[in-house]
Image (cartoon, rainbow, N blue to C red; front, side, top):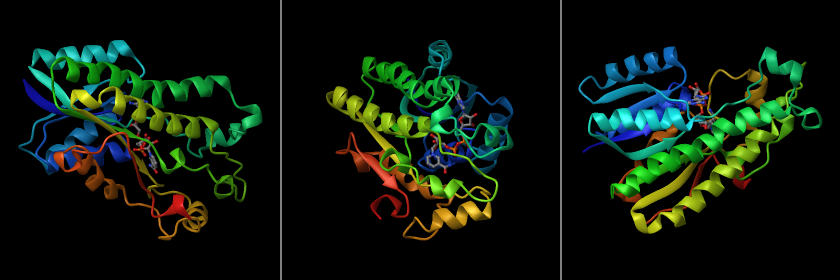
Length: 264
Ligand SMILES: NC(=O)c1ccc[n+]([C@@H]2O[C@H](COP(=O)([O-])OP(=O)(O)OC[C@H]3O[C@@H](n4cnc5c(N)ncnc54)[C@H](O)[C@@H]3O)[C@@H](O)[C@H]2O)c1
């Protein structure tokens, strides 16, 4: 069987970087997302960078067992098995015109939003781990699961950084619950599969620079000892480390890379 690494939510800002990191290790990759156009763009971007590498793109909804199973079945037809799984997909409630109105205040928090975000960010990671991880174990594959959490997996959001001018956005409770849950899932699976040759760790990025409003940047920088947001390529080294033998004795850990924010 041919080994590939699979990244969920590959069409987004960090998914593309995780994919690049694994290609730099000479790994074969499967990029997946629900965003067809975004996935195509990412595929073209990666192929330009690494024209000779094996890259497969596939639509996959992490919140659907059927979608994940279908993907694994299709890969198996090509004699492909996944040995690195990056659970990266999530819904991030950003400050947008749409949710400015809703503002996400806990007192009014909409149960539909709770269910929708948890279904992707937390249940999605559990389902992918269950289906892909079980397949690794069944086939005695040495593998890695990397769950993408956040600095908000270890600290509470500072709501003051979202409130300026007319913005009344509140970082939603779902984000904290999902990211703390991701760390719980990581610890659980790390011991569950510790003797099955599967390492399970999480990576917790701090806020990544992505055209955020200047006022937001000014406020968040004050909370970060390094006084800057992360660049999107500053997690590639960690992904490589967690997906190779350099981390052979590391499992169940949450690697926090946040410019020092969570220790201040
Ligand atoms: N960007 C940051 O500042 C930051 C900081 C800390 C943690 N993170 C975490 O890193 C990960 C990636 O973040 P990002 O900034 O690249 O986000 P992003 O919004 O750019 O990308 C997320 C991707 O997930 C996909 N997605 C949404 N629902 C899906 C589903 N049901 N199935 C499959 N894919 C689905 C989206 O289409 C999108 O391409 C997330 O888990 C996020 O919480 C990001």
